[in-house]
Image 1 (cartoon, rainbow, N blue to C red):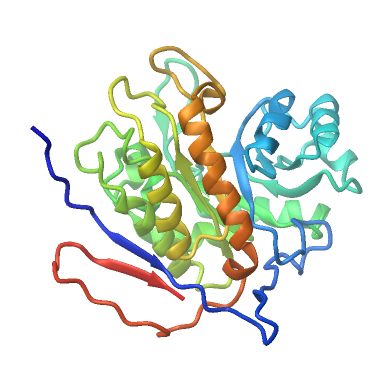
Image 2 (image 1 turned 180 degrees about the vertical axis):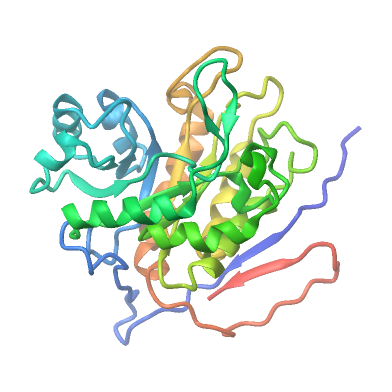
Length: 326
């Protein structure tokens, strides 16, 4: 017996940004940074999280244009491999990073991942509180004092979208922290993976992705760029994994609600650890490649100004909201 499924949300993207010549009009949001991401209006960041630079050519062929994070890096070898593959990177500003400050391979700096989550006290010692927002703001100033020609990315955890996320420890259910955290960055990002999620409050509810993006846009007061992470593997879930259709839905939910860049999380721990599980999944890789290429084709439009109240939409079912962007 086939079971019918009511979608959690409907999405509409109305392309209505045309010049007199009929060509899309856009503007890069990165023009303020001399050595940041491309100033081309046709550039839309499609990144992959913490991958081996030796696989950069494979990701490039799948429509990726940016690496975010380098394991225990950056090292000179990692940067050399990325440069050979034509892949840009956002990484930590360590000694090697500062050594390459005049090299265009690095297009941005980043904080440590998920400082808003409870922080490990060491193996077997449990967890302490999250890193305070003040520390992130102070680190942001230090990074910028060394190099203000590149943006600084801050990737936050699932507390951005889900207030009850217990992984924040003593700061669980304290969303008021986030408007402070985002003062310490130029690009604010977050991650939540509803399909692979282990908690029933979130599992299968794709709209948490859109909610997180919407909240970041609000908390940054639209003065900073918002990105977000996308699931495409089992991660640590032995039974649930996003389908290509669900990945596509999460991607367009994100963009329609204001995300200006995507970071795919491609690691998997079940049934065994695979750092680059996306590359080992032909069906998902094909789907992600198609999504990436569609975004790249639409990039000049997506980078153009959103027309507020340019369209009205209603739903016959009040339980199925419709999100629209023109």
